Image (cartoon, rainbow, N blue to C red; front, side, top):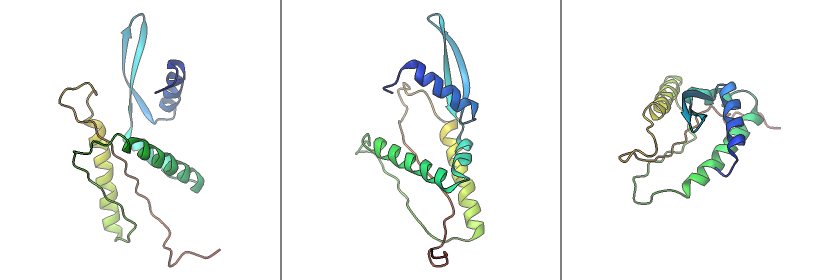
Length: 140
């Protein structure tokens, strides 16, 4: 990660305090305690709601991470991509949102150690949010 163990440990503890990651395992290793954390897929929703500037900061961070990950794209692998800004019914919005939550939970529930010989390293980023309709937005 390019950071000291102490710095990473501090930030993981802070992320755990605010509920973004969960401590899932502690192991005694060489006289110390190693801790393994897992991201709580539902925690991101709290980050994306609230103030517009906080939402924009999160989206900017996700965009930067997506760019960084894309440099590691395995070009011979299948690529699935969807990008849209559309209008859908309230029922469709609720279904899409629920399915996206389910996908996020599935991804995290099915994660295996990166050393797993049959494991497939993957990247996923999905952010769903309602936007102001340009046609009806007040002009400032």
